[in-house]
Length: 634
Image (cartoon, rainbow, N blue to C red):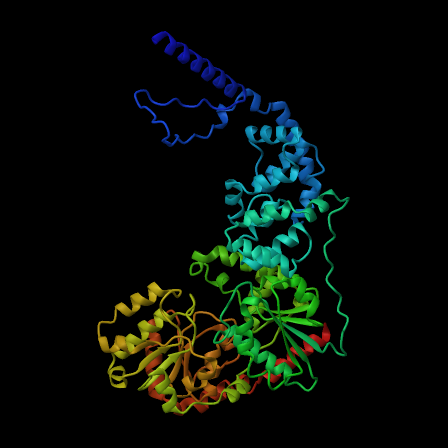
């Protein structure tokens, strides 16, 4: 029995040595043997030890690249790199690279997607499979672009060689899904996706397909393969020249195709384009307005224009699609107005467009916005593309035109215009004013209050206003006033929540702490009443792209206002002597201004209104006339 057992053992040993020999021959690492004395039970699975990656120094001679070959391939690649222009599309790069021989193809493919030279093992592995016909070139490219290393390259800040596919993708990966999908179609197919394409890709994302997976799937599609096999890559689509579809360019598109679902009601940007639309519709030249939005924002868009639709049923039209190919095809706009420079889908408009650049606040406060700077770098890249291709870029103030437009974006002066906003006369007239009792009951807001009507943003300075209000309430006048401070936003899950909470926690007096109210966002229709019944409005913001809206809105409702001394305000209110102004970084000054605002009361309003008469007398019909003049020149 013992001899028989030994023969079986010898046979196993021979088989094992043979297998090890084959593995070594193929360049595979030696498999570690199980520890002696530990039996493996039949039928029961046990985990294997994790294999360690083979360091470059351990690669066998067969998987190395000789110095002579490496020098030759680097020399060839220098010529390849010189042939690829910065700013080209991925399909342009790949169309050239796919025409190279296998070695040069692999060398450049690594640079295109990983921004480095190939390692010896990967180079020989892919070269062997290409020569054996086991993998196509597209499959090799798809494999590399889906690797973990590629993910690290694609998701970092734009860096590395600028004439690589990876550099292009680094600019796309921070985008919303719709923007990303349109971006890869433009990069790989030279066209915008149709509705079915977008729907399939969005569904794939929801089912867990990664962005690299979407890229690989598109690369492997028959359409891309045909483009790679063609003599020339697809020509970039030319923007349509302006040829009026109606006399005088009567069809104006309002572009609201945000890449994600957003809340428009109550936001400054939402109120801006509703007011502008109303002003354009009110002009005697009879513009037709075409509102385009995405599927996620259909209800919100219809809601904010609900009051205008019955007034202009034949001149106000709505369209929605997640495909820019469809938007360009179905919306009969001669000229577009893009009210926000961060809408990435605007870069795919075929017709001429006017873009409104209100501000690029993150450039002015890099420390405040450092946590989300990757996002704002993406927004900045969009701003550069969209303003560069715009017929005209409109700013709300000279300050923003000079800083954002002429300095940061290097726009030519002739491409820029300043169109100041106006007081919301028409909007507030349509809203009407609630009775004081009705308003206070609705919001459980009793007693005297001052307010800062604004959503919480990093630069809005809520925490310093809380500090200043606390200081005021500790004075004799403040204790007697029993004033409340009312904010029109929620505190939870908002920017600066920690800093605002810390400012609140400093307040030891429970009565003062209870007097600071976060009432949440309120409908735009209730804003006039909020202003009307306030003792005053305090505007502590550190920065705005134009004179802050609450200053004009408050005076329109005959309520006095205090605000920070910003150069942008001085453009339109050169004489600030009748206002309670302050350094927005100084809570002590701010507290004194709150006291002055409360002590002066509403009798000071006529003097303040006179000082701001230039803005108060300007209507949104005037704003619309300025836009109409720009449209007529395009």
